[in-house]
Image (tube, rainbow, N blue to C red; front, side):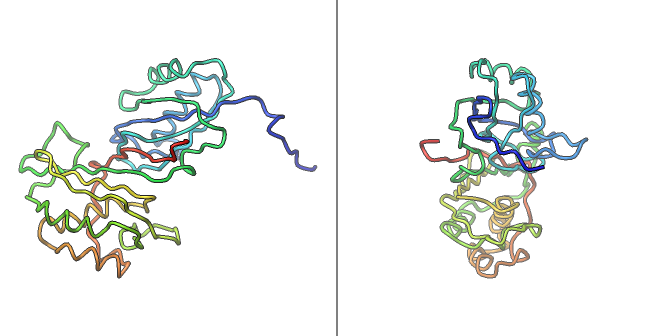
Length: 263
């Protein structure tokens, strides 16, 4: 039998809805839907949306945050043939069906061609390090506790060397399979805030575990094990073994996803 080709005019009318989602990822096996028995953000969101719009949906996320990683501004989109439900009502209804650690912050109509991942122009992540001798139990799962002092100025000097377009193979996980490991870092800031140090990184894209490996390396610089010039060595050698350990997922959050203004 020959394949049947459907024109867009033959398909039922549908809406493309863009969502901004926040979540505490401590209890989940990351964003992406996985095998049965693994609780994920995507699966929870798809289940709640399906109950509201009255049909199965597939949610497309801008990025696959790992197990234990959080988001303040994950972007996603889905298609629905439900043309009646208003966006405000949809957001409220979905939030009432989501667990307390996941929330849809906004919902808006998007162009048919909008795709949360393919249309993204960049992302901003932030990593929170709590530097204090006593474990901050009230922030458990939200920060990485480091009990020794860190030199913020040295970490800033190291972070500044990451700015620009580089081959970040040395900061990628060993399981990274993409051939092109060149990325552009537009912002890499280290700031002290009370007993926390915040590392904020914005780029056009990130390799697997790249931000956590950057943070692990900056911690090694901050504790005096390496100087800031270690960054230059890692960028030139492209060897993962030259970089620091992978920082735990606890302190990492996807702050926002960047798109063209028209998106």
